[in-house]
Amino acid sequence: MIKNKFTMTLQSRSFNESFVRAAVAAFVLQLDPTLEEISDIKTAVSEAVTNCIVHAYKEKLGNIYITAEIYDDNLLKLKIRDKGCGIENISKAMEPLFTTVGGERAGLGFAVMQSFMDTIKVRSAVGKGTTVYLTKKISQRFNVNG
Amino acid sequence: MSVEINVTGEVVTAYLSGELDHHTAKEMRQAIDAAIELNMPTLVILDFKGITFMDSSGIGLVMGRYRLLQKTGADLHITETPPNIYKVFRLSGIEKLAKLESR
Ligand SMILES: Nc1ncnc2c1ncn2[C@@H]1O[C@H](COP(=O)(O)OP(=O)(O)OP(=O)(O)O)[C@@H](O)[C@H]1O
Ligand SMILES: [Mg+2]
Image (cartoon, rainbow over all chains, first blue to last red; front, side, top):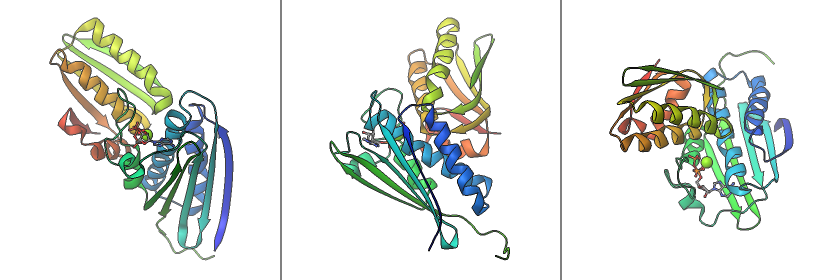
């Protein structure tokens, strides 16, 4: 059962990278995550949002749609969506070190999301956009009543 | 975000602080590269003690500096890396290019 949810839409401005990951981290606090879990989630969110800005919309402005949901058993589900250029070959794009932008990009964004979250699913259509689904179960540390 | 540069002999140390992401990486890169060009070091140390957040943009920054330094054969060290940043570096296999030390 869903226990809480927030959605937001922002412009693809690079300043918003830090804003989105801070907002998601603050939302997740209700699950009493460890510092490591917060850091993992912030890093994964930053990767997905940066990809919308750098790849999906390139230098143009577009909207980024974020949804965060909390389910039973401390399950966090995140959705990061853009209406940008889309990905032609998703499995190739997700390979470590694969990048279509040379120079200063490592090609490790998807590898980071994969390693820092429990599951990742990517849906994309060329010319229509991309949605990244991420989930992570937050550890239940103390058995607090309620 | 800030970069402080210290030059001692042939060693350039860049003390990085704040959040390292796609938004801040460019300014950090420009500060580091300016110091490299000016001083022609044989060793560059990137000190991550003050970095509170880093995503793969930070890995790209280090890889780019490694490539730049290869032209002159200079070494690259990453020091004082906080645990959450260290975790991102470990995933990248950056140790093959630069000496990596945790805090
Ligand atoms: N939202 C997106 N829209 C369009 N293309 C994307 C999107 N996300 C990723 N891609 C494509 O997938 C490739 C791999 O993405 P990934 O995040 O793994 O690496 P990167 O962004 O190139 O480099 P890094 O994340 O290490 O800075 C990108 O180079 C890009 O071609
Ligand atoms: Mg990326």
